[in-house]
Image 1 (cartoon, rainbow, N blue to C red):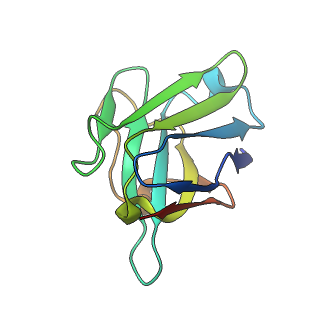
Image 2 (cartoon, rainbow, N blue to C red; image 1 turned 90 degrees about the vertical axis):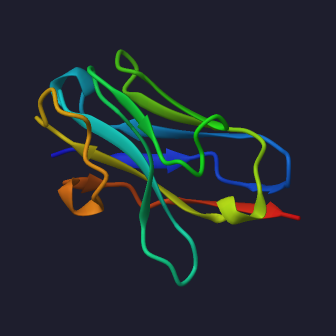
Length: 126
């Protein structure tokens, strides 16, 4: 069982920056799969933002070049550095884990992820 707890959500002005963190209860090297950030805006589907594994890092087109995903396996932490924020980035951001995915690129479909955090809210004001 993996428990995920996000933090770092806040209200910021457009153009600002924010870093989200996700703490995993299980030593992350044992996950040996994919970790990712998803987000859900009001009235919209939950969408993939960025994913990371030993083999690949992927970003949604809407955030590529502005967001950076990283992890510190030794500390059991996953990060999402967000810059040049725009109001369209306003959403609840969720951390997710899919153990044992293998060497393929991480899935973009939220239904492929087994474990989820409770989410942290990011609001970007124009």
